[in-house]
Length: 245
Image 1 (cartoon, rainbow, N blue to C red):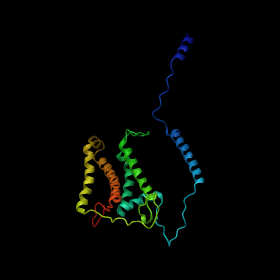
Image 2 (image 1 turned 180 degrees about the vertical axis):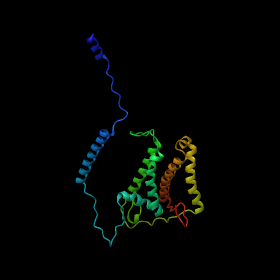
Image 3 (image 1 turned 60 degrees about the vertical axis):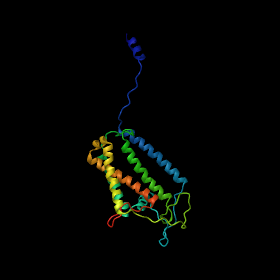
Image 4 (image 1 turned 90 degrees about the horizontal axis):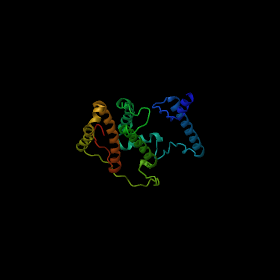
């Protein structure tokens, strides 16, 4: 009888253990991050051994370099200064970036995606963040490869030279045209998504929706203004005696 039961148990198919939905951060995640960090460190050490750092000549206060470029991690901010008033590019926009990142945990309370990566369940959030991240690095790339003497535009394959065509003069629309455009962009940008995606608006609520759309419109407006500056030489969208937008 015992032999029959043992043989029956042996013939039964063995089912695989279900994969746990959650695992502990230690040691599963931390150990993997540590190994990835070691691998990255080895790659950096090998790269630095065979490739020299691009050091320049000693600074000469009597002959400043042209163009004078900030470190690469500040070149995005230096590039933004081309398109906007210094108070906005140097103070307001960086403050929006810092406060926007601080607001993320409070305006995005979607429980999906916690502990695992998913794009299908968080399309808007992931797309919004990645788009702004890529745009900032595009500004850095432009500052590194496309800005030559006097911060003039040079394509990467062009030779830097002081003999280049004088750029066209900058212009700004009259406030009677700039003000309606400015208001239409922000008011329309706030109203249309709330009407088009009503369920999304109701899910966020008026406060969180307003904060989210404000930061989104600021980012899109920054990109749009950069395009207008490069393509149409537009200096400001709204120019007033007190403040410029």
